[in-house]
Amino acid sequence: MIDVTLLGTSALLPLPDRALTAAALKCAGHTLLFDCGEGTQTAARKAGISLMTADIIALTHYHGDHTFGLPGLMQTMGSMGRIAPLVLTGPAGLHDAMAPILTLAEGLPFPVRLLSLPDEGLRMDTLFPGWPPMARLTAFPTCHRVPSQGYCFSLGRAGKFNPERARALGVPLALWSTLQSGQAVRLPNGAVQPEQVMGPSRPGLKCVFTGDTAPCASLTEAARGADLMICEATYGQDDQADTAAQYGHMTFSQAGEAAANAQVKRLWLAHFSQRIEDPLVFLPNAQAYFPGAQCGRDGLRITLTFPPDA
Image (cartoon, rainbow, N blue to C red; front, side):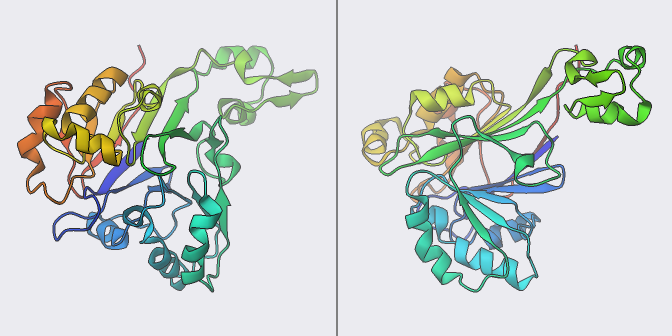
Protein backbone atom coordinates (compact mmCIF):
# COMPACT_ATOMS: atom_id res chain seq x y z
CA MET A 1 0.00 0.00 0.00
CA ILE A 2 1.20 3.53 -0.86
CA ASP A 3 -0.30 6.81 0.37
CA VAL A 4 0.39 9.82 -1.86
CA THR A 5 -0.49 13.41 -0.92
CA LEU A 6 -0.11 16.35 -3.28
CA LEU A 7 1.13 19.17 -1.06
CA GLY A 8 1.03 21.94 -3.66
CA THR A 9 0.28 22.62 -7.32
CA SER A 10 1.78 26.02 -8.11
CA ALA A 11 4.72 26.95 -10.32
CA LEU A 12 7.32 29.66 -9.68
CA LEU A 13 5.70 31.28 -6.64
CA PRO A 14 3.33 30.21 -3.89
CA LEU A 15 -0.17 31.67 -4.01
CA PRO A 16 -2.60 32.17 -1.11
CA ASP A 17 -4.55 29.04 -2.08
CA ARG A 18 -1.89 27.17 -4.02
CA ALA A 19 1.46 26.08 -2.55
CA LEU A 20 4.46 25.22 -4.69
CA THR A 21 4.34 21.78 -6.27
CA ALA A 22 5.55 18.98 -4.01
CA ALA A 23 4.27 15.57 -3.00
CA ALA A 24 4.70 13.25 -0.03
CA LEU A 25 4.68 9.47 -0.39
CA LYS A 26 4.21 7.23 2.62
CA CYS A 27 4.79 3.48 2.69
CA ALA A 28 5.11 1.12 5.65
CA GLY A 29 5.40 4.06 8.07
CA HIS A 30 8.17 5.75 6.10
CA THR A 31 8.05 9.01 4.13
CA LEU A 32 9.57 10.21 0.87
CA LEU A 33 9.23 13.87 -0.19
CA PHE A 34 9.35 14.99 -3.82
CA ASP A 35 10.71 18.56 -4.07
CA CYS A 36 10.72 21.16 -1.31
CA GLY A 37 9.96 24.72 -2.36
CA GLU A 38 9.23 27.72 -0.19
CA GLY A 39 6.33 26.95 2.14
CA THR A 40 6.37 23.17 1.77
CA GLN A 41 6.35 22.83 5.57
CA THR A 42 3.16 24.88 5.80
CA ALA A 43 1.56 22.95 2.94
CA ALA A 44 2.36 19.65 4.65
CA ARG A 45 0.90 20.86 7.92
CA LYS A 46 -2.32 21.93 6.20
CA ALA A 47 -2.52 18.48 4.59
CA GLY A 48 -1.96 16.71 7.90
CA ILE A 49 1.38 15.27 6.79
CA SER A 50 4.41 15.18 9.08
CA LEU A 51 7.74 15.57 7.30
CA MET A 52 9.79 15.44 10.48
CA THR A 53 10.84 11.82 9.96
CA ALA A 54 11.09 11.84 6.16
CA ASP A 55 13.91 9.53 5.10
CA ILE A 56 14.70 11.01 1.72
CA ILE A 57 13.96 14.22 -0.21
CA ALA A 58 14.08 13.69 -3.96
CA LEU A 59 14.75 16.93 -5.85
CA THR A 60 13.85 17.14 -9.52
CA HIS A 61 16.17 20.12 -10.14
CA TYR A 62 17.63 23.06 -8.27
CA HIS A 63 15.42 26.01 -9.18
CA GLY A 64 14.29 27.91 -6.11
CA ASP A 65 10.64 26.93 -6.33
CA HIS A 66 11.75 23.33 -5.82
CA THR A 67 14.49 23.79 -3.20
CA PHE A 68 14.13 26.97 -1.13
CA GLY A 69 12.10 25.20 1.55
CA LEU A 70 14.97 22.88 2.43
CA PRO A 71 16.91 25.00 4.98
CA GLY A 72 13.82 25.74 7.04
CA LEU A 73 12.55 22.17 6.93
CA MET A 74 15.91 20.75 8.01
CA GLN A 75 16.21 23.27 10.84
CA THR A 76 12.72 22.36 12.02
CA MET A 77 13.67 18.68 11.92
CA GLY A 78 16.67 19.47 14.11
CA SER A 79 14.67 21.53 16.59
CA MET A 80 12.21 18.65 16.90
CA GLY A 81 15.01 16.38 18.04
CA ARG A 82 15.78 14.46 14.89
CA ILE A 83 19.04 12.52 14.96
CA ALA A 84 18.40 10.02 12.15
CA PRO A 85 20.23 10.67 8.86
CA LEU A 86 18.45 12.50 6.03
CA VAL A 87 19.20 11.68 2.39
CA LEU A 88 18.97 14.30 -0.35
CA THR A 89 19.06 13.14 -3.95
CA GLY A 90 18.89 15.01 -7.24
CA PRO A 91 20.33 15.31 -10.74
CA ALA A 92 23.85 16.30 -11.76
CA GLY A 93 25.35 19.08 -9.68
CA LEU A 94 23.85 17.90 -6.38
CA HIS A 95 26.85 18.70 -4.16
CA ASP A 96 27.38 22.20 -5.58
CA ALA A 97 23.67 23.02 -5.44
CA MET A 98 23.30 21.84 -1.85
CA ALA A 99 26.40 23.61 -0.51
CA PRO A 100 24.63 26.94 0.18
CA ILE A 101 21.52 25.14 1.40
CA LEU A 102 23.54 23.23 3.97
CA THR A 103 25.37 26.40 4.98
CA LEU A 104 22.04 28.08 5.73
CA ALA A 105 20.97 25.05 7.76
CA GLU A 106 24.27 24.63 9.61
CA GLY A 107 24.46 23.10 13.05
CA LEU A 108 22.03 20.29 12.36
CA PRO A 109 22.04 17.50 14.97
CA PHE A 110 21.64 14.84 12.28
CA PRO A 111 23.80 13.91 9.28
CA VAL A 112 22.71 14.88 5.76
CA ARG A 113 23.82 12.51 3.04
CA LEU A 114 23.93 13.59 -0.60
CA LEU A 115 23.23 10.66 -2.88
CA SER A 116 23.02 10.30 -6.65
CA LEU A 117 20.74 7.40 -7.49
CA PRO A 118 22.33 4.52 -9.42
CA ASP A 119 20.97 3.76 -12.88
CA GLU A 120 19.20 0.66 -11.62
CA GLY A 121 17.53 2.62 -8.84
CA LEU A 122 17.75 2.45 -5.08
CA ARG A 123 16.33 -0.32 -2.91
CA MET A 124 14.93 1.75 -0.08
CA ASP A 125 15.60 -0.78 2.67
CA THR A 126 19.33 -0.68 1.93
CA LEU A 127 19.38 2.86 3.32
CA PHE A 128 16.54 2.76 5.83
CA PRO A 129 15.47 -0.46 7.58
CA GLY A 130 11.73 -0.84 7.65
CA TRP A 131 10.96 -0.02 4.04
CA PRO A 132 9.49 -3.05 2.26
CA PRO A 133 12.28 -5.01 0.55
CA MET A 134 10.67 -4.55 -2.87
CA ALA A 135 10.34 -0.75 -2.58
CA ARG A 136 12.56 1.01 -5.09
CA LEU A 137 13.18 4.63 -6.14
CA THR A 138 14.46 5.25 -9.66
CA ALA A 139 15.32 8.51 -11.42
CA PHE A 140 14.85 9.21 -15.10
CA PRO A 141 16.11 12.18 -17.18
CA THR A 142 13.66 14.92 -18.07
CA CYS A 143 13.81 17.84 -20.51
CA HIS A 144 14.12 21.18 -18.74
CA ARG A 145 16.38 24.23 -19.03
CA VAL A 146 18.77 22.84 -16.42
CA PRO A 147 19.80 19.31 -15.41
CA SER A 148 16.60 17.68 -14.20
CA GLN A 149 15.06 14.33 -13.48
CA GLY A 150 11.76 12.79 -12.53
CA TYR A 151 11.22 9.89 -10.13
CA CYS A 152 9.51 6.54 -10.24
CA PHE A 153 8.66 4.85 -6.94
CA SER A 154 7.73 1.21 -7.31
CA LEU A 155 6.55 -1.32 -4.76
CA GLY A 156 6.96 -4.85 -6.03
CA ARG A 157 4.89 -7.77 -4.86
CA ALA A 158 6.15 -11.28 -4.46
CA GLY A 159 4.21 -14.30 -5.64
CA LYS A 160 1.94 -16.30 -3.37
CA PHE A 161 3.64 -18.35 -0.69
CA ASN A 162 3.15 -22.10 -0.99
CA PRO A 163 2.97 -23.53 2.56
CA GLU A 164 2.69 -27.11 1.35
CA ARG A 165 5.93 -26.76 -0.57
CA ALA A 166 7.64 -25.17 2.45
CA ARG A 167 6.56 -28.07 4.67
CA ALA A 168 7.77 -30.57 2.09
CA LEU A 169 11.18 -28.92 2.11
CA GLY A 170 11.28 -29.06 5.91
CA VAL A 171 11.16 -25.31 6.52
CA PRO A 172 10.05 -24.55 10.11
CA LEU A 173 7.05 -22.25 10.45
CA ALA A 174 9.20 -19.64 12.18
CA LEU A 175 11.28 -19.21 9.00
CA TRP A 176 8.41 -18.82 6.55
CA SER A 177 8.39 -15.03 6.89
CA THR A 178 12.08 -14.95 5.96
CA LEU A 179 11.35 -16.67 2.66
CA GLN A 180 8.32 -14.43 2.09
CA SER A 181 10.55 -11.37 2.47
CA GLY A 182 12.78 -12.66 -0.33
CA GLN A 183 15.63 -14.10 1.72
CA ALA A 184 16.99 -17.64 1.67
CA VAL A 185 17.00 -19.79 4.80
CA ARG A 186 19.63 -22.34 5.78
CA LEU A 187 18.62 -25.78 6.99
CA PRO A 188 20.76 -28.73 8.07
CA ASN A 189 20.25 -30.33 4.65
CA GLY A 190 20.99 -27.16 2.67
CA ALA A 191 19.59 -23.74 1.79
CA VAL A 192 16.04 -23.11 0.61
CA GLN A 193 15.62 -20.24 -1.84
CA PRO A 194 12.49 -18.04 -1.94
CA GLU A 195 11.69 -19.08 -5.50
CA GLN A 196 11.31 -22.67 -4.29
CA VAL A 197 8.26 -21.76 -2.22
CA MET A 198 6.93 -18.62 -3.93
CA GLY A 199 4.77 -18.39 -7.02
CA PRO A 200 5.35 -15.93 -9.89
CA SER A 201 5.62 -12.25 -9.01
CA ARG A 202 2.29 -10.43 -8.88
CA PRO A 203 1.58 -6.91 -10.17
CA GLY A 204 2.93 -4.23 -7.85
CA LEU A 205 2.41 -0.46 -7.56
CA LYS A 206 4.08 2.43 -9.33
CA CYS A 207 3.96 6.20 -8.77
CA VAL A 208 5.72 8.77 -10.99
CA PHE A 209 6.52 12.40 -10.20
CA THR A 210 7.70 14.30 -13.26
CA GLY A 211 9.01 17.60 -11.92
CA ASP A 212 9.51 20.28 -14.60
CA THR A 213 9.83 18.88 -18.10
CA ALA A 214 8.86 19.21 -21.72
CA PRO A 215 7.46 16.06 -23.35
CA CYS A 216 10.20 13.44 -23.73
CA ALA A 217 10.55 9.75 -24.49
CA SER A 218 12.24 9.03 -21.15
CA LEU A 219 9.14 10.21 -19.29
CA THR A 220 6.85 8.02 -21.39
CA GLU A 221 9.01 4.98 -20.75
CA ALA A 222 9.44 5.60 -17.02
CA ALA A 223 5.73 6.21 -16.46
CA ARG A 224 4.51 3.27 -18.52
CA GLY A 225 1.66 1.56 -16.73
CA ALA A 226 1.98 3.71 -13.59
CA ASP A 227 -0.85 3.60 -11.08
CA LEU A 228 -0.42 7.36 -10.58
CA MET A 229 1.43 9.96 -12.61
CA ILE A 230 1.82 13.45 -11.13
CA CYS A 231 2.66 15.52 -14.19
CA GLU A 232 3.54 19.13 -14.69
CA ALA A 233 1.07 21.18 -16.74
CA THR A 234 2.36 24.73 -16.56
CA TYR A 235 0.42 26.17 -19.49
CA GLY A 236 -3.30 25.78 -20.06
CA GLN A 237 -3.77 26.69 -23.71
CA ASP A 238 -2.69 24.67 -26.73
CA ASP A 239 -1.35 27.78 -28.49
CA GLN A 240 1.21 28.15 -25.67
CA ALA A 241 3.09 25.03 -26.82
CA ASP A 242 5.99 27.06 -28.23
CA THR A 243 6.37 28.98 -24.99
CA ALA A 244 6.21 25.76 -23.02
CA ALA A 245 8.96 24.25 -25.16
CA GLN A 246 11.12 27.36 -24.76
CA TYR A 247 11.04 27.06 -20.97
CA GLY A 248 11.03 23.26 -20.70
CA HIS A 249 7.42 22.80 -19.65
CA MET A 250 4.16 21.25 -20.88
CA THR A 251 0.67 22.36 -21.74
CA PHE A 252 -2.37 20.59 -20.35
CA SER A 253 -2.84 18.82 -23.68
CA GLN A 254 0.78 17.64 -23.74
CA ALA A 255 0.48 16.26 -20.20
CA GLY A 256 -2.67 14.38 -21.19
CA GLU A 257 -0.98 13.03 -24.28
CA ALA A 258 2.06 11.92 -22.26
CA ALA A 259 -0.19 10.04 -19.84
CA ALA A 260 -2.07 8.40 -22.71
CA ASN A 261 1.16 7.35 -24.42
CA ALA A 262 2.43 5.85 -21.16
CA GLN A 263 -0.91 4.11 -20.52
CA VAL A 264 -1.00 5.22 -16.90
CA LYS A 265 -4.01 4.47 -14.73
CA ARG A 266 -4.37 7.92 -13.11
CA LEU A 267 -3.13 11.40 -14.00
CA TRP A 268 -2.89 14.34 -11.61
CA LEU A 269 -1.94 17.64 -13.21
CA ALA A 270 0.19 20.08 -11.20
CA HIS A 271 2.73 22.93 -11.45
CA PHE A 272 0.18 25.42 -12.78
CA SER A 273 1.36 28.85 -13.88
CA GLN A 274 0.36 31.66 -11.53
CA ARG A 275 -1.49 33.15 -14.48
CA ILE A 276 -3.95 30.25 -14.38
CA GLU A 277 -6.64 31.35 -11.95
CA ASP A 278 -8.78 28.21 -12.32
CA PRO A 279 -7.03 25.09 -13.69
CA LEU A 280 -10.39 23.40 -14.22
CA VAL A 281 -11.02 25.74 -17.16
CA PHE A 282 -8.27 23.99 -19.11
CA LEU A 283 -8.85 20.45 -17.87
CA PRO A 284 -10.78 19.46 -21.05
CA ASN A 285 -7.55 20.01 -23.01
CA ALA A 286 -5.88 17.21 -21.05
CA GLN A 287 -9.00 15.05 -21.02
CA ALA A 288 -9.14 15.12 -24.82
CA TYR A 289 -6.11 12.80 -24.66
CA PHE A 290 -6.59 11.20 -21.24
CA PRO A 291 -10.26 11.25 -20.20
CA GLY A 292 -9.53 10.46 -16.56
CA ALA A 293 -7.16 13.39 -16.03
CA GLN A 294 -7.64 15.34 -12.79
CA CYS A 295 -6.51 18.81 -11.85
CA GLY A 296 -4.42 18.40 -8.77
CA ARG A 297 -5.25 20.49 -5.73
CA ASP A 298 -3.35 21.11 -2.54
CA GLY A 299 -3.99 18.26 -0.13
CA LEU A 300 -5.31 15.83 -2.75
CA ARG A 301 -4.64 12.32 -1.44
CA ILE A 302 -4.93 8.75 -2.62
CA THR A 303 -4.15 5.32 -1.21
CA LEU A 304 -2.85 2.95 -3.86
CA THR A 305 -3.44 -0.72 -3.09
CA PHE A 306 -2.32 -3.87 -4.79
CA PRO A 307 -4.72 -5.12 -7.45
CA PRO A 308 -6.71 -8.21 -6.44
CA ASP A 309 -5.25 -11.57 -7.38
CA ALA A 310 -6.68 -13.07 -10.53
